[in-house]
Length: 355
Ligand code: NAD
Image (cartoon, rainbow, N blue to C red; front, side, top):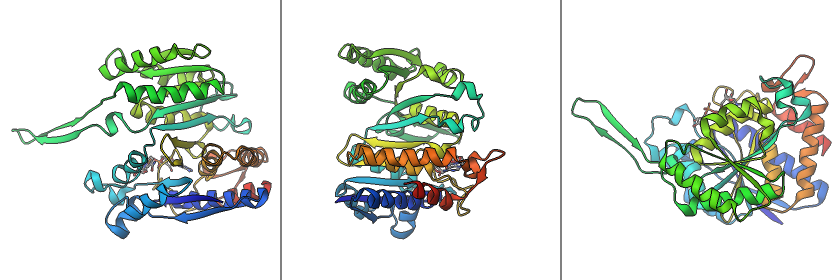
């Protein structure tokens, strides 16, 4: 029996997570696996109900589960709260920190039937299969920050970007180990021409690379990488980078797949892995059944593979998603002429049918 904590969160987070749970239940029935799902509050929903975006009961549930399925946190309703109470910093960022989830894996694979769905040319995106390994508990998002008044009545704001050798080495090791199971190529992304933290990053990655003689390593500045990702994305296998660079580059990379609604992620490194779509709560489409649930459903597949070691079951979900897309069904974000438009729940129904 596998215990899965379900944290739907805010906005479309709850709309897509409920569909991912239905898909996992279908896989459980097909493969005779017993999954128990326990739901808990997080983000703005938790703040409204309890006054904190990460209640103690939620953290306890996460710590006592085999894996966590997360939706999204945040929205305009909570944007004016102080930082520690905001759903993003106080909810998901704290959860990652508390659970020690220092490695975020974001696979970017272009499904053959979606080669025309990207705003980029099909010949650029066809066959893309890369993995972004993003450091998740350090850097600017967690460094000391403050704001002070200046004598002229204006303000000075400071965020701190720091990394230690230990933090860089452990995320790089994850990237090298994963590259060994793929095409054996790591590209480390930094801004070593300007930032001291990036200079340390490059030194540590280079030194660790000597332990992985079978994996090729190159370094790329983040600005060049942003350009290369849309110019020639097929050159990449595994990209490893610090927190903020990874945040930005992975949203950019989602364009290769046609939509942010296709990008799954796994956050690992601590005792319990957390699986979530790469997108946020999408307030612009909340409550209309417009959200693409596939990122959340594919995050469920990653949960099975990485936390529960159920590779065959994960393959089954990925195959079902491929088949439904091949049959021409699309949510609004991926809609093209000649395809059949379906809503959030209908997309999940189709995937469940194939399972
Ligand atoms: P977003 O990812 O929520 O949305 C960006 C755009 O992509 C929107 O136009 C949205 O409609 C679209 N989109 C996203 N997911 C989609 C899906 N599954 N199907 C179809 N279209 C989809 O980013 P944002 O608008 O910058 O942020 C909204 C809120 O989410 C903010 O409060 C932000 O802080 C929060 N956020 C949370 C997380 C998280 O919980 N991990 C991540 C990113 C943003």
